Amino acid sequence: MALAHDQGGLDAGVDLGLGETGGLSEGGARDFVLLLKPRVMSLVVFTAFTGMMLAPGHIHPLIGLIAILCITVGAGAAGALNMWYDADIDAVMTRTARRPIPTGKIRPDEALAFGLVLAAFSVTLLALLVNWAAGAMLAFTIFFYVVIYTMWLKRSTPQNIVIGGAAGAFPPMIGWACVTGSISFDSAVLFLIIFLWTPPHFWALALFKLRDYGSAGIPMLPNVAGEAATKRQVFAYSIPMALSGVAPALLGFASPAYGAVAGLLGAVFVWRAWLVLKMPDGDARMIPAKKLFGFSLIYLFTIFAALLADHFAAPALALLGGFA
Amino acid sequence: MIDTVDMTEAQRKARRSRSIAIGLALAGLVLLFYVVTIIKMVVPGT
Figure (cartoon, each protein chain N blue to C red):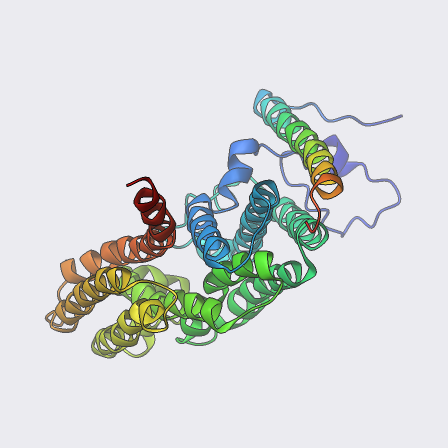
């Protein structure tokens, strides 16, 4: 406290932002890890790894591991910068009120510095140690998530997550670029799967967290266009999303067996979206929306796991055939 | 005269936790650069 009061020569009217703790943080390492949004990071790791494995060509396993580490840290940095900018609305919503900045464990300026340093490190390392194309794509992804989605779209349009969802869809393309040094039509299909998955996933959540987003002043689709319009949009997006899941098999870079699994998962998704569409107006429990949200997580994980399994199944079967 | 800040026990504990994490991260970076240098020297085309 003495430090806050005795800044000789400084204007007395300047707020130094040191607060009651004399500018010293009470945030431990665990709080800083929470700032990186670990659950989102796990999805980024998985989808980037899948993109890397499906890409034609070879990457040294240790370089691949470092690439995944850089992409993960870059995604975490974007999460930290998102929490820095959104601290005011996070404090209002029950889902986010326990985050490190609203609880006062980490100061906003610490989160900003942490996010910027990690972003710079992850992009530079990926560019220098793997390749420049992957580094540039990671930099663009962080920029897109923080500036385009968080700072601009999130608070200004109910279509925020449609466009902003692109940021979450880039990791498999970055993983792919780590191997090939470029993007391709096949990697764009992996992007499309996540891009089309994001709107029904988030709008299912927004339906049963409607009040939360409303009290924070975020223009999510249910608050702006109403429940009925949101349900229609969820169902409408679920159809191209299901088709994009099958696209790898139709385009020939996954087997018909994968296509069957993806088709089945897509059909269940569309059926669950149909149940959301048929949900009675004013249904406070929103069970179909909650079930769709839960299934959407299983869907995305299983699609990418099936792509990986399919990719490794052919060489494994060939190897078994060789022994027989 | 230099003013000092008396840290609370929570602040002291948090600082120690952060210091350990930063130390581990720096050691990891040293190891990472060492490993990548060796790979790029030994394996052609990486």
